[in-house]
Each structure stands twice: as structure tokens, then as C-alpha cells.
Image 1 (cartoon, rainbow, N blue to C red):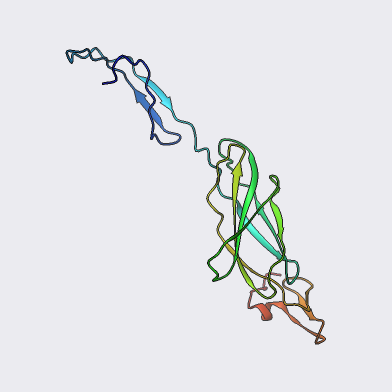
Image 2: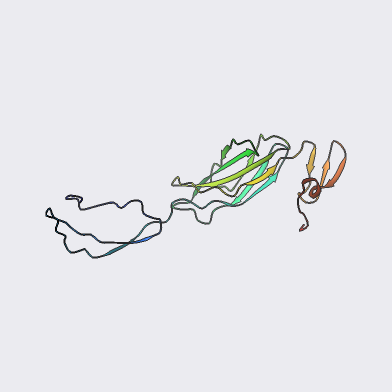
Length: 178
């Protein structure tokens, strides 16, 4: 019983769902009126964007990693405003964060430790302030000082020891498709 109120807000409804609504009036002696005409209403879609996809890391130096990703296909209730990037040394348990200044789908992490593995994840925040779930995390390792990467799956040069070798073997990755 809502008293003499003639409006009511339904809450706790699911996103993008059709509801059929009827209204029945009840007087003080608990007699009900005939039900109103059914009204169909569909709730709005989820205001949160989908997570970014295809997160890629490019090792730039012993202290920096370049990141890029694909913007989410579904941005929720509004366009993407900026991205949150979380990163941590693998096993440290403590996440650092950095934000893009706009909707650019790339950033460079700097001030990292040499020869260190980092777990990295990204989420999108839209203009309405809703954030996405995080992307699938990736692991990237900063370069070893004195080691110049020519190309991920080609050759590397160790400047200090005048050695060259196959990056695939040095990093235990599969470069058979290159």
C-alpha cells in the first residue's frame, strides 16, 4: 500500500530487459480496482563499457614498456573518456596505477625495474564515469641493461659482451611464425 501516491520507482531491475507493468488501486477497505492497461517498458542497457581487448606490450628499454590495446566495441552509456592501467611486479601483490589523459588506446610505462616481469591490465572509463571490467592481464618483462632488442623474434645484441643470439631461445618463446 502506497497511500495516495500516484507514482512509484521500480528499482533493482536488470539491464536491457522488457517488463510488463500493471497498476491496481486499493481503497481503504481493501477493495481492488480493475487492473490498468498493461504497459511494456524496457530498461536501458548497461552503462558500463566492455573491457578493452588485445592488450599488447612492446619492450622499449630496461625501464620502460609501451602498451597498446583495442578500444571496447561497446562503450556503455557514453563514449570512452580515459583508461586505467594497473601494473605490478609479478608476485609483489601491490598494484600501481596510471591513467591516460584521454581516450587514446596506448601509453608508456616508465620508471620500471630492469629484467623484471610485470603483470599489466587495462580498463575503460566512459564519460558518464562507469568503468569496465579489466582486460585479461598480460605479463611483460623489461629488457636487461646492455641488451638491445632489434626485433622480438629476430636477433639480439649484447653490447657489453659483443654477443648475438636468437631472441626466441633467450626468452623461451615461439617465433616459428615469423
